[in-house]
Amino acid sequence: MAKKSKAMAMVNVPQSRDEVVETIAKIGSLQLLIEGHKGRANEAIREIGKGLEENITPVLTELNALEAGVQAWCEAHRAELTNNGKVKYHNFTTGKVNWRQRPPGVSLRKVEAVLASCKALGLSQFIRVKEEINKDAMLAEQEKAAQIAGVTIKSAGEDFVIEPTELETAAV
Image (cartoon, rainbow, N blue to C red):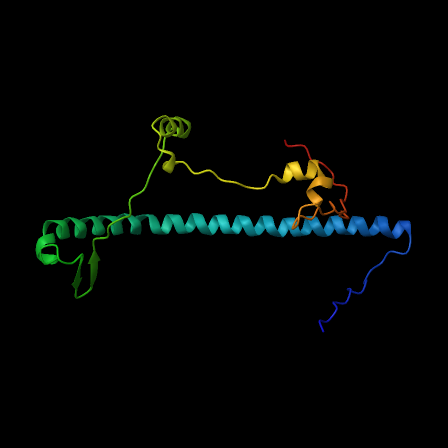
């Protein structure tokens, strides 16, 4: 038998309207404190990223130059390195180089025009038709939709939201 989950015990339940007002004010203060911590953390992350970028830019430049040089040499000696094309790699004592074939891909410009051309040429195998349930229509006609096996119309539900009043500061 599955265990039932226990409801959490209420820790701080205000006992009067004044206590609710004070509690909402405290909630607002705590939310502002959290946002302040998040803001400082994000600023620290930005500074770290900026420092990293400054440190690795010259290293990346050197790395790209070395990789381009190795590729140029290997392309010039490809036949001897790949045993006249029998293999797509070569092992050096300090590492390995590979020539990898990328899979073909399709790129489209003006998708509507391509669809129209496929239809005009009778190339329906290049057109995919996707069937899916229209949930908006089901919500509009809930009684009919509820008769369908596997369909359940759920209640929209209700959320309790506390929005502490904030002072708006004008940008100077």
